[in-house]
Length: 302
Image (cartoon, rainbow, N blue to C red; front, side):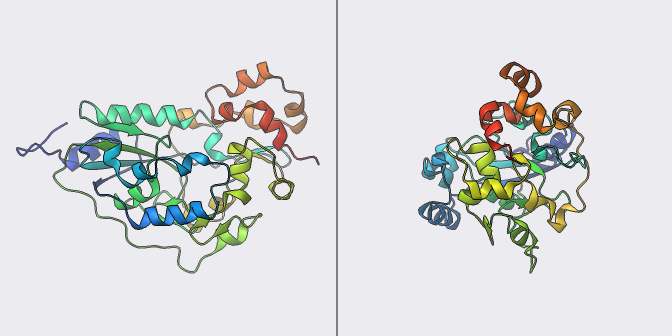
């Protein structure tokens, strides 16, 4: 990676390398401790909106200060990887969220981040550490946090995976934070949420279909299950109705392409499935971690 005489990395060269590796968007933000965002997080936790995600209650100090993750951090590099695909499952088929159409994004994006990082010091994170990804993406100029609590990029929409590199390296310049919000008076995501899990810029996981079908290891509340319909893994409703996703274009990552064998499974196919078949079909996909037993629990009774 090219640096200038002062030993700082050249932003333009780094962005060019990111593009060659297949990242759709990249931004770089200077280090600072978070303030208001942490206070919002603490209020959200106090309300119990994290439901059973107790890990959100831990390491708040690290979410506030990235230097507790990487000593002497000076820069946070944020990438977006588009995963949108126009494929839709047939009506009546148990529904899987778009992000799980292909292979597990954690490993794929992490490998690309490591290539981008190269020989510079630092650590790579993909939705697996106490980092407020959406806020750092905003600070890196990549978009705003919408009323559905997701990062929205004006060109790519919200169907994107966020990757972060925290490094002690300095850059010759940084991207300008994205301080505008283009949600305006639109409330489509809030109005479309079948369980009422959304309020403007706040998600209550206790009512969220995605939380209950992916993360919840306990009892699946009946009122949520009834509203979920055929959704057995995740829920894209608040993204599908967002006007900023009307311009989303198909991704270019082969590993994220939908598998007809997995996505055309009928309800009866799921009910008859054994662990061996599940492992064959869903190895290295997001569904592998959730497991067959919980996905069968998520099937509607209709």
